Length: 286
Image 1 (spheres, rainbow, N blue to C red):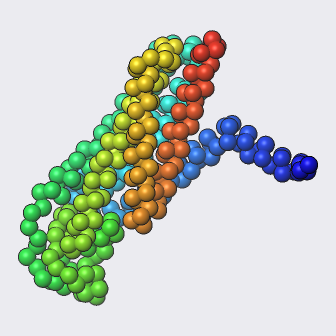
Image 2 (image 1 turned 45 degrees about the horizontal axis):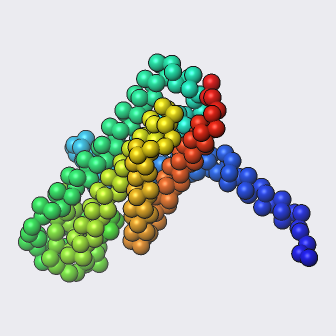
Image 3 (image 1 turned 120 degrees about the vertical axis):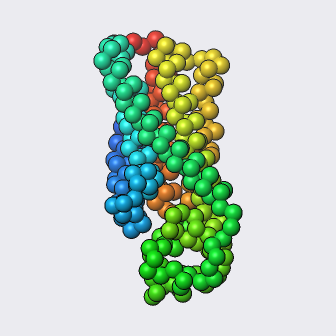
């Protein structure tokens, strides 16, 4: 007979309660807030390096696109959390509550649209590059305000580093005053593609969750429309692949961000599953 370790069993029980309860939810949410600030400081650092006071607001918003995107997703996550866990049917019946949630959602979707539009423009600009720059060496560009980019790493081109950055031509101008070599150009193409389809995959996920929330607001938990709401599963699969790509490219913060957000929306899915089970059991949310 195997002896049971009461202390070990206690630890397992505590872990199970943590995973099934609210502890893991608030842990994920807290990490998402920390993650937002990590992105904010990283993107501000890049933006202040590459841009200046004369740069357009569009240029600044493009450089800060992930920070803006994170604000939109945090707002949506808050709206879903309130609607699927904290607000009762009676509260949702109040017009001011419904309109407040929709105003929050509208603002968040506007920020997400900015991300998609930025990624579409970046892809179009990349595809529009047909000819390399007419230079043989990066040392032709020092002290002219040019930057060298490889795998999203920006470095100012100076007389001291122009030889060490890259010695292989041809060179391509992938952004205004930002150049890279042939390998960097290919990597930039992969980044543009993954950025675009990742943003679209997240839109699929959030629309599927929106559909599930709207249906369950009407006490609908079965049927073809509920099956359509399961499109989020396909979106999650794509997002996992995207996270693997970011990790393989050495962008561990991006991979960490992907895992955290999948975890965040998994929490909402769990809220929905509990909500669905309660509806099926005939519970009233008054």
